Length: 210
Ligand SMILES: C[S@@+](CC[C@H](N)C(=O)[O-])C[C@H]1O[C@@H](n2cnc3c(N)ncnc32)[C@H](O)[C@@H]1O
Figure 1 (cartoon, rainbow, N blue to C red):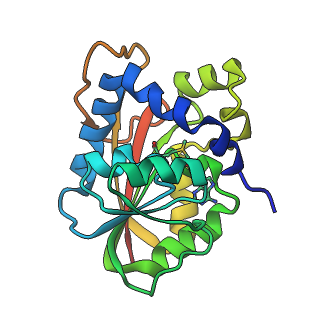
Figure 2: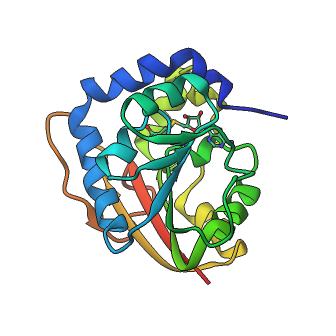
Figure 3: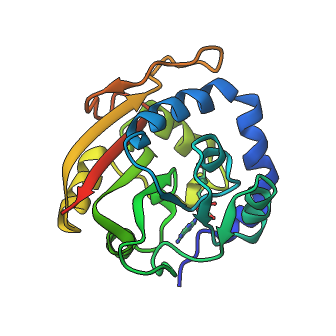
């Protein structure tokens, strides 16, 4: 089976340090995610990585298959369960929201992962996905950079993710976005509500379990 988490074992510290050098980009993304999460209480992050987003968003539990990423998240106080999005070790209807941040592009099987996310959500629970749109300038930069991590990624557009979520039984879509083409680390960007499909670098899709 393809397992994209292995590559993260070799880059965990570098991956985590990137956010120290680009703190305002991190803050811009967190502030947009906070809006999406705000009405929901008890959530989990899938592919929590080093736990930076979980901590900033007050999410106490995450799943993460990479040992070295998980260690850093545990050091941040996140309760990390070693598991894959495609097979979540939780009972049906356990959470109010399920969050994915820059993780859907690394999943082994996105349909199975969305079906698992739906299973562990309570009725009217929310799936919230923060991702780099495949049509964005940042995605094109990543592809050109030949980064060890991003050459493993399968990027999606907001339209493609929307279709996959509809197929998995989600509805009632909301879109937020931040970081336009000229974004710089020097400034924190205000999140915008609305699709902005492909025009913004970081997009959030939120949808509700039918
Ligand atoms: C780009 S990192 C994002 C980490 C964190 N969410 C963040 O934004 O900082 C992607 C994460 O997804 C994890 N991952 C890869 N394949 C996965 C899978 N099948 N199920 C769950 N997580 C996976 C990787 O190990 C990695 O930690």
